Image (cartoon, rainbow, N blue to C red; front, side, top):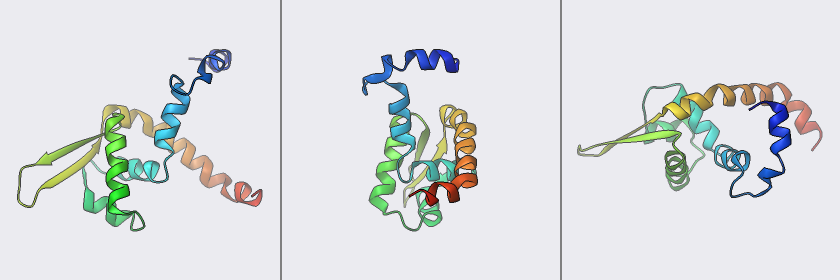
Length: 121
C-alpha cells in the first residue's frame, strides 16, 4: 500500500478493532516487546532464562505474558522439549523476521533522535 493510499484509508482505520496500525503498534510497542524481538533476532533460538538474563529488570510473569502475546500474534514460536527439567526455546517466525527490518529502522531513528525527544519533555 502506498503512502497516498494509506492516507486515504485513515478514516477507514478509525475503528480500533479493525485498524491494522493500532493493532500491530499496540503489540510491538509494549514496554518489553521490541527488546525481546531484538534479542530473538540476534539468535536462532533463545531460552526463557537467556532472555531474562538479557533483560534483568523484567519480572518472570511479565516476560511470560509478553512472550505469550508475541506468540499469539505470530511473531515468535515456542518449542517445548520433553526433558527434565523442561526446556523451552523461542525463535522468530517468518512474520517476526519480516517485521525486524522495520523495527531496526525505528530503533535507529529513536537512538539518533533520543536527545531531541527527551529535550521536549
